[in-house]
Length: 127
Image (tube, rainbow, N blue to C red; front, top):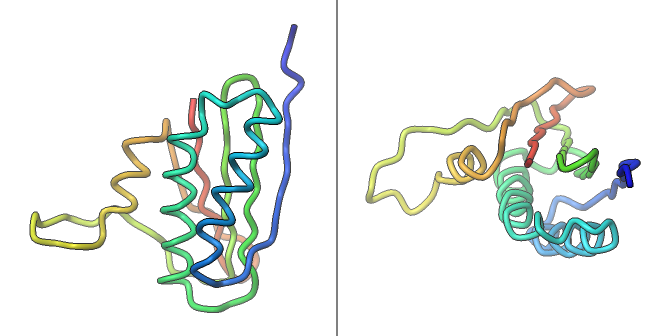
């Protein structure tokens, strides 16, 4: 049977509680869509993306999380109202923070950032 694809979106406030809320939304949707095999990596990735937005983007509007499954590819998109772009920076062993985008890079097939309105959209794809 051919997978016809699935998609959903949710708006989240700029708040640390949105990290856990985004994981719960993702987990519920992937279970409902029969893609439970992607939950663990996707939960880590969405946590990193939402954490980055809450910490670095400032409170500029809502966060908008979009999830789309086509075949076996899961695409996550997180839009916010900030033009500050995430990047994988050089890490020193003594750094306690700053590893988020390195984790995203390892767990995803590809990722990028696009201009979106007055802000940006960070997207990732997991195979």
